[in-house]
Image 1 (cartoon, rainbow, N blue to C red):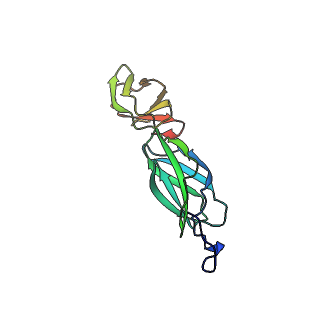
Image 2 (image 1 turned 45 degrees about the vertical axis):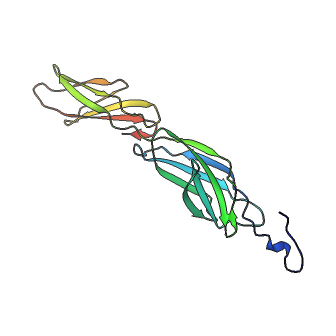
Image 3 (image 1 turned 120 degrees about the vertical axis):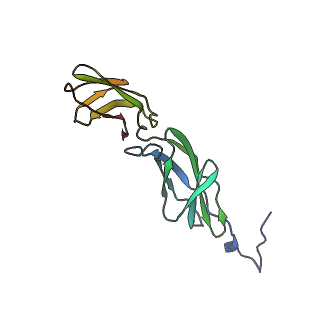
Length: 185
């Protein structure tokens, strides 16, 4: 459809929405994030052109999840499932319309591991063997298991069991934690 310019219309009456944002990036922020509470930070470049946006619509998997006001060009998406890939785009909006999508950006949310499960201890001679089932990794490989007893005895291993030296005829209980690059469960 062409636009008629004459006595009753002018070129400045061209009511179109803003251009699309560019340079969208998605960055995982996994350090010390609780299991299944991942965070991905988004950043983009504001569009150029005649119309300055008033807001930006954050899209994840094709659905709008948030709106931020211009001039803000960042957003943190939290509460994400560990070890899950997310895809984002951003749209600029003003009173006249909404732009096309920006470029797509993806990131996998990573967190600390979940807690090890099915832990048990077997008493031995001046030592106890503690074993457990591997937990969900949080999206990053588990690098260590840390075991601590109620009497401050400790052990570290990359396996699923550890022997901890302890005094004879005493009673202990143990907590088992998993470590990955993001922190401890």
